[in-house]
Structure formats: C-alpha cells, structure tokens
Image 1 (cartoon, rainbow over the protein chains, first blue to last red):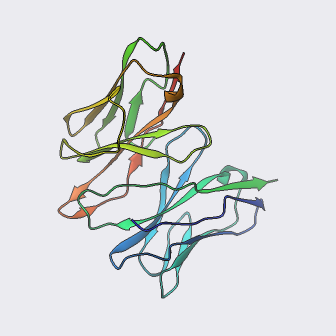
Image 2: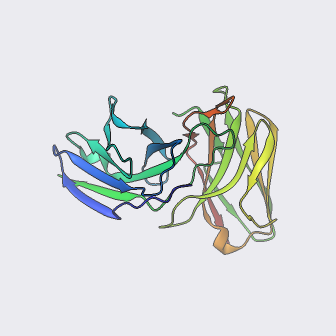
Length: 112
Length: 115
C-alpha cells in the first residue's frame, strides 16, 4: 500500500476554506484516494473518494493532479464542528481483501 | 448513526476478567474489521473478516480472539488483558462486490479500560 504524508496539524477560522494536502509519491495505477474524518472518541467517517482530476460532493472537494502523487481535500467555509482529524488513505478499490490502513492524519482546529 | 452498532460503549475490566465486545451491522455488508486506537496514536488494524473468513490478522496477541458467526455480527473476545490494552476499539464494515470494495462504515467504538 502506498505511504501517505500529511501535515500533523492545521489551524483555521470559521468561514474560511481549508485545504489539506496529502503526498503519496508511490501511488499505484489501481489505487484510489480516500479521505476520512474522525471526531474524538468516535469512529472515522468517509468523506470523499477519487481517482483523478476533481471530485465534489456536498461536504468537500478532492483535487488530484495529473501525476496523482498528491491530493488536496478542500473544505469550504469551515465551522467549529469541522474540528477533527482528517485521514488520507491510498489503496486499491478493486481488491477483495481491501485493508484500510490509517496514518497519523491531520488534526484540524477551527477557531471562532 | 452509521448503521454499525458496537456494545458496550464503555468497559472497565480487570486483568483476570474475560469479556467480549460486540459489533452488529445490518447494511448488507460482508466484510468486517476490528481496529484499536490508543491515545494519540493512529488506528491499528487488528483483524479483517471477509465473507465470514478471517483474511487478516495483524500480529495481534492471542489474548484478543475474534469471532464472526455471520456476516452481520463480529465479536472480540478478551481475556487476561494488560493495562496497555486500554484503548478505543472500533468496528467497521464494508461491502465487497466481486473484486470491488465500498467505503467502510465505522461504529462509535468501545472505550476499554484495563485495571
């Protein structure tokens, strides 16, 4: 599984756009990029998944450049409730024994 | 509410006790996972069951014993644990369709304290 690197922590203010970048230099051709969000003492929650270019849903956008060696999770107009740990995962979706391996994640703190 | 239910939410046990954690999902998923999350550490994958067969055992000590009687239920049997086993234990499930696997849904976790 491709190794991922994310910033350990980020600070932001309410109403701002937050961009969290993840590096995955060894991403394989059949790997997808998936982001999860985790609040304290809760299980992670799926946010978004993509393979290339841009994916958008009601929660976030995911930008993936052509070389796919990095990806950026974009959270528009964050609120205090977006304070959480965000994990970037890279792995094959087309795998019947798909293992979710989590790294250290990025701890986002949204301030008033 | 994710559709994955874990019980109990909190558990305190002595080192000589035997207890079990339970996970239940009725999402039609056929893969289930146990994770351990210690304070300030990443989630550690412990076990994976796919179609009720254990497909992953990440060098977990034998004092942790998983059981998957059917695709909707997953147990983690605990015995003679150590204080360092205190952690948040998370269950997750996903659906495998042929060679594809959907995103995982996690339970709220069981906060385990070993005294």
